[in-house]
Image 1: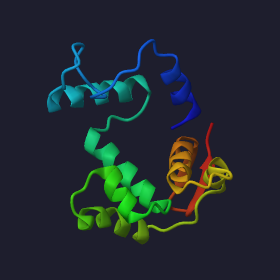
Image 2: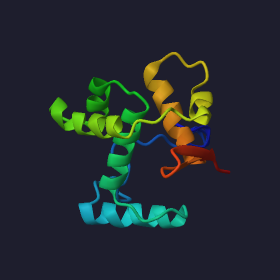
Image 3: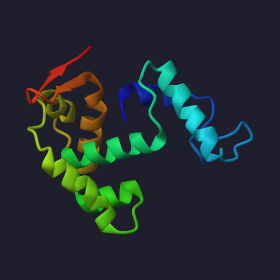
Length: 140
């Protein structure tokens, strides 16, 4: 979790539980409503339109690329079988690159492996990859 998100959550008047994307009465949105919501969120954030599944796959792949334990990734992704999770691990292995210094710096001295991965994932927002050169550069 980034510090920006943490501060935003702390400013909420009430702590909500249950569904993240939901109707005003707290009930679950349909798949179609969720898709519309994520596209709206992406547009307002100035990001390309991506659906839930693309974002989910990106999260899983990047977590695997940063070295998250496959069993932990399985739990985070909610997979029933480890072979589902291993697809992310295999993709990560096929595209192995050194972890950018900016991400290692973001992880700092964190010793908890889960928090370390989450800190690095959060820092990816400010790092732009150039696959043609096999390099990354920091972006503002």
